Length: 229
Length: 177
Image 1 (cartoon, helix red, strand yellow):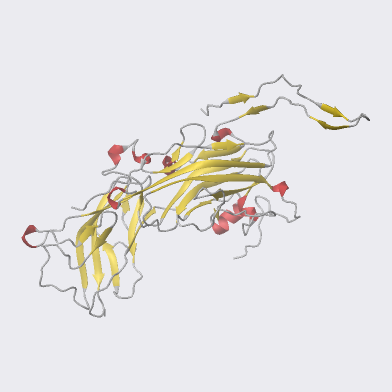
Image 2 (image 1 turned 90 degrees about the vertical axis):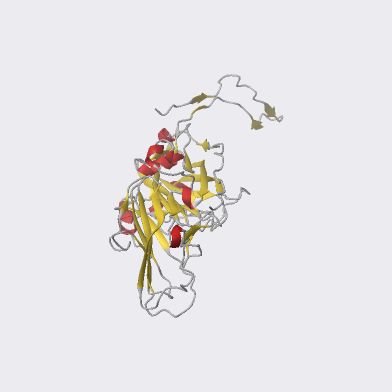
C-alpha cells in the first residue's frame, strides 16, 4: 500500500581517499567515500509517520504520491459530487474556519521526540509568527494527562531558539517512541481578506528529547504536571 | 445578478520533500509538506451561503438578502423594487421575523450544527431563524450536502431610532465533539 521506494546508493568506487602524509607519518586529512544505504518510505511508514486520520476530514488530505499534502480547495467534493448541491471551491471568505483531525504523527523511531511545526508564508526563509494569513495548526497531545486537561495543543512555531521547546508545556508536544500525536488540524484564524488562494509549505519537525541538554525534566507520556494556566 | 468572480485557482504542483536523517535513531527530522488553500465565494464555499430571492410587492425582489459577489449580507428594509417604499424600518419594541432569506448548505465533510450569535449593542437580539425555530439553543443539524432555508429574527427592544450596521455571526460546528 505504501508504495515504498527504495534508494540504494551505489556501493563501490570507494577509494578517492587521499592521504596527505606530512613527512612524519602523521596525516592531517583522510577522505574516504563509503556506501550508504538509505531507504525512503512513504509518509505512513516513515520513521516520522504522517498518516491521514480515519475522520471524514481526512478527505482534505491529499495522499497522491508518497508525501501527503493538505488541500482546502473543494477537491474533497469531487469524489462525491452528487452529495453537494453547488460548486465547492474553497473556504468561506471573511470567516474563521477550523478543520480538525487531518492527520496523525507517529514516532516510529528509537528516541522520544518533540514535534512542532514551522511555516514560512512569504518564502523568504524565515518562519514568522502571527502572519496575515492566520494559518495555524493544533493537535491532540500524546500525553494523556495534558490531553484530558486541555484537550489539545498548538503546534506552530513552538521552537525558535535552542533549549527546550518554547511550548509552555514541552510534555504536550512530546511523542515517545511508538506514541502518536493524534489529529493535527488546521485553523484559519485570521480574516483572510482579499486573499483568494494560498499556497505554502509547512515544515513538520521532530527533534529528539535527548538533544535538549539543559537538564530540564520533561514529563513522560502519562505523567501529571503542573499547568501554568 | 451579481457578477461572480471565478476564484478557483489551479491546483499547484505538490512539491513535497521529506528529509529523513539517520539510521533509525533519528535525532531530528524535518519534513516539508504543501498546503493549498482556496477561498471561495460564499455561494461555492465549504459553508455555502446563497441569498434566496424574497419576493415582495408585485413579485419583485426585496433584496433584503444579497451577495456582493463574494460574501452575503442583509439589509432591512431591502433596496429592491419589491420592498415597500413607505417603510423606513423596523418598529421599536418588536420582534420581527424575516423567513427564507438565505440558503445555507454544508459542503464540508462532516455533519454540522448551525446557529448564529450576536454580540452587538444596538439591537436586543439578532439571530438566524428557520421555519420552526431560532437557531440558538437547539440548533438543527445539517448533513453533509444538506441545506436549510433561514432568515432573520430581530428584536428591536428599546433600540434607538436610527440606522445600525450590525454583525451576525453564522456558526457551523461539527456535531458532538
